[in-house]
Image (tube, rainbow, N blue to C red):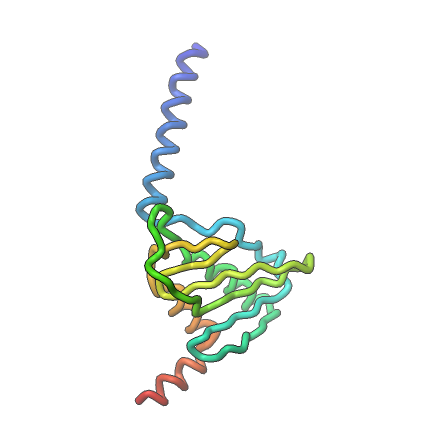
Length: 146
């Protein structure tokens, strides 16, 4: 009886591992180690398309948006990064313990914890971050270009 259960257990474990691997390869891998919302005291967001100065936020809604926005930074785990490039948007999380963590991205690359990764959904993060944190600046730039 125990042997039969062990055989079924091995099949379930192997199936689960296979499903996770296929899911990551098809949908992308999440950035690991993003701070929890409750651990963040404030955030600073920079978008070099609009300004070199960071916008700082300490209200709960902006902190929650900045943390959840990182969910759009799924990357292709086995893909090389496309050519040399520089970050456009940087989010720095200032934690309640006094430390900070920064992530940066451009159209197709994310920088996190000293590593670069090829984004699965190119440009989605930039469009969302601009719409959330730099809406007024984006509208003004769009009107100036017309």
